[in-house]
Length: 151
Image: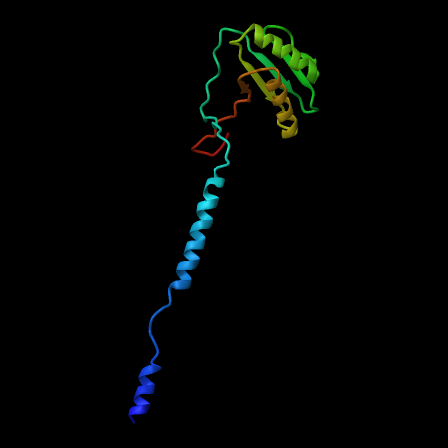
């Protein structure tokens, strides 16, 4: 009987959880997150427009650049008439005007039906002209009636 008791004591099951594999997995995940966390900050800083925007009040006439639904560019320099321009002429004229009038505002307006890529190309042209800041023109929308949900 003693031999069977000794055998029974030697082969007694343990009621413990082996946590070593869980620690290994946790450490691997920790290393992965530590490596990838600095790479996740790839956003672009932008300032979103406010809902109750006020119109700009400037002493000087702004430079207006507009893009119609067909992708044609138009330029209005100060008090001059609106004229159709191509890309090279836009860069040359706006660049010269901004260099001569450093405090002048440059405003850009694009038709809502035009491709967004075409709008970005026009903004790049203004950047090439040396314009430091470009304002975007919009049409004011009607404020919805809160009581009836109508505009």
